[in-house]
Length: 390
Image (cartoon, rainbow, N blue to C red):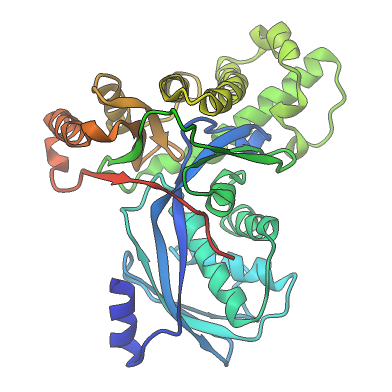
């Protein structure tokens, strides 16, 4: 691995350990966890590696192969405010962990991502990989839910991203060849095995070649629009309501939404429409997976992608084009944007026997539309994998 080679080159010794956290995909259940919805997910066999060794003086020193700037801080003096660089997630993770456990030992490490950044929860993956390393050098043993909540808190409270816990849950709970079916309200989950009669499948990742966009700031806006819809629906129906920040669509019955949805501003109604229909798609998808019906599951994933475009209103021109191409490509059971949908990639469940023709067709059709992205667009065929080892 390049991170090991870079570590050895810098520190003139081998790393003492390597931390790994897989990336994740969410076929159905996107844009719903922050409103306590249900989700489905897989961890994939690509992710974040960190080659590291402990530093007894408490200093954390990190280098990423994806970014130029080296980051450094002390376990007992994390900056109060984020510094608006790639290491903010890890500063936040250090701070959140230190609020519950004493930290004395730091680490030096080199971080490597095995796929381009965007759409696969790389921020959550690097945070969890880092936390697992920091816990190891300090003799801390987190439970699965502690790891999930600590990593989520780093994003919510330090970085300022109003995400739910979909990403972290997939990267911790998932198991190879099993679908994670999770209720983010109470963290109850089921790992549904691949049915013996299910048609073979792999996961294709189509990177748009767009890695940076100003539209990412719309993520928090979408969360507020969902909360606004829930708050208004409670008011229209006479339900009790408290703080805006403690209001979620999961609190509002679907029947109440149907009764009062026409009173909502158009944007709020669309966000709510996505959430309620996605909730039902997830439940139907879990049943389809239990039955071994990957075609039905894939169709629901395509429907999720459609709702994300037209109700949740995410997606760059590039990602929308990829979605349309996927719809018309033989061998793809289903798919959608992966991640927030403002940049990055699409994921698809595919028939492995079509892998070559799928790559050829999607690449040809996409680059016909966006020739400037030649050399940046890429296709990766992946398998499911276990979540992080704690």
